[in-house]
Image (tube, rainbow, N blue to C red; front, top):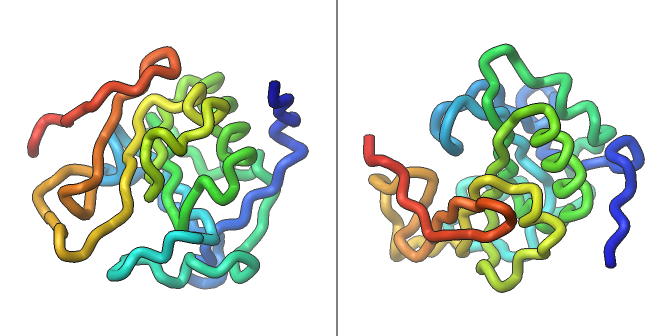
Length: 171
């Protein structure tokens, strides 16, 4: 049984954004259902060919902040937090702790991962509402699929830690 530490015991490494600020995007309408705070984690061990965020691949080149600071970026419009990257599962314990706190605060959670569903740690899945699984594959690129970059990627709605394939309404 994994015993998670308290949120304030974690740090998270984020992509360095514009002007040296943490890689966080406020009030996004395209990175999950609702209005999302998007957290771009640093570090990716998958390194998909054609990745749109290659600067996020190398761990140690980002900006490390205390995990609770993520919530300083929530606005009155924010309805959820989306974890993107890099590969968020490289920081799985911090992601689980932040997602747990987000849900306590009434925010939905979504995780974009290049890993497949069987690779998802249950202690992360326990705190998610939505999940995108699958590596980006450039030959399968698709611009018309919500929340995905290629047709091999699968979306899941997660209820009580049970993921079910999900297809959002097309816009």
